[in-house]
Amino acid sequence: MKVHAGRRYRLYPTEGQAERLTSWGHTCRWLYNTALEQRQFAWRQRKTTLGVTAQCAYLTEAREELDWVADLPAQSGQQVLRQLDQAYRNWWNPQHPAGAPTHRRRSARLSVPFPGQAIQVWRLNRRWGAVSLPKVGVVKFRWSRPLGGAVRNAVVSFDGVAWYVGFGVHIDVTTPEMHARPDTVVGVDRGVKVALAMSDGRMWNRTFTSPGQERDLARLKSKAGRQDTTRRKRGAKTSNRARKVRAEIARAEAKTRNRRRDFVMWAANRLCAQHAAISIEGLNIKAMTATAKGTVEEPGTNVRQKAGLNRAILDKGWGLFQVALANRARITGTRIVKVPAAFTSQQCSRCGNTNRNNRESQAVFRCGSCGYQANADVNAAINVRDAAEAAPQLTGRAARDRGRPAPCRPPAQRRRQPALEAGISRH
Ligand SMILES: [Zn+2]
Image (cartoon, rainbow, N blue to C red; front, side):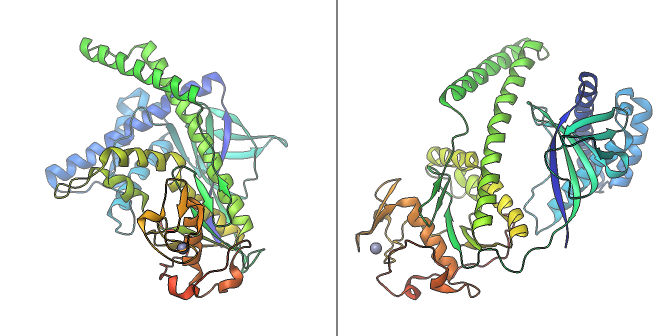
């Protein structure tokens, strides 16, 4: 089966190359935002939809008039317009969770896209590869993993810390019929206190910032806020000093993001390698994080606490974890089962008694009926695993991992109907 995959490498442009790529990144953002405004304007005024072909014609005109637009390789500009078009199509697609396309912010990461025919990629030696980009020439990158297939396109980006080149590759993946370790089911509870708790009692967590780093970041942010207020009062442009502070904030945030990404990928990889089936709660993160404010008819309650919870959810990288699991599962042959999330934290995994008082505290679960006591997240993970076991393809009891206490009631009575989904959908 041919699939699209992404391969990202650290890119090492020279100072001159980096400068030019930076200015291209800003041009790409400008182009995207301008094209978006153009489409919105055309819709408001004439109720017409501007397509990517029409916009490419406008781009050609703009290139004749503006030197700095002409400096961006034409193919990159066209690629940006195609990205916008895709953003619109995603929005119109009822199967896709994306909302209306929005502006790209100046503070977002810089990126310059290149279509496959504009670039060339080759390997220099064991450690280094090279990519030739239009106008900037050959740029070295660290060959940290095999490409695995034909390069279809590239995106050069800068996240505040380092430069990267990401290749879209067409790879051949054969998902094995059977996992290397069949009959290994695990339930995973994605928590706030502990990032991941497994039904076999394992708990994986990592902090992505030290208290010192958090303090530094807060200091920088308040400094940037002060500078912003002063700037607005004077109606001045952003000073060089303010730019430096912003760059430092971006740097700190990018580092945290990279650590989180690393943890999530590591966990997904490990879980898929060790288990033939992974059961997770089918949480709708987008809805969970969006409902804190509530609606007009039904204003949200506990907005403050919910906001804190939301931050924690996003901080642990749940959304990314789902995507990473699905990607790894394709290679190991792991089956990902999503089960309904209701009551997993309040239900006793031994007798099935469901009561909100069972959860003694954030960390401790104690059943009011049978007295079963466990870590609250592990108890939830066992419930998640058992909900998946009702799925017909699995071999019931035999699929359980070791060390689990014998149930005091036949398991059938406490099983809920799981919502079975092959792979993971994007919402
Ligand atoms: Zn119980």
